[in-house]
Amino acid sequence: MILATTVVLIATSLLMVLLVLLHKGKGGGLSDMFGGGMSSSLGGSSVVERNLDRLTIGTGVLWFTSIIVLGLLFKSKGVG
Image (cartoon, rainbow, N blue to C red):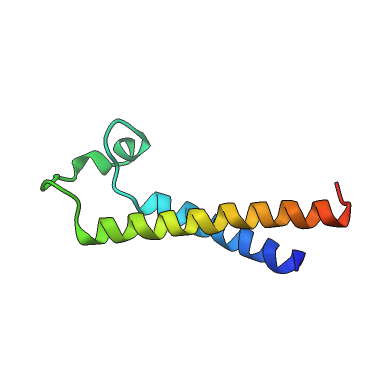
């Protein structure tokens, strides 16, 4: 059980990094330094951007849940 939860944690961590990097920059951050500020905003967020937000939030919830489960599993085993 600990191994499976650890694999889920690692997979969701990597996916979170990828998803956050895919988001469009809001301005003034690192994304502008690397050319993200050149994009024109057409007003509002697109369907793709909203779906990316939902996927990022869902992955974040799964990531957070796997951390809590791992903590409980380690506590019940007496590790740490």
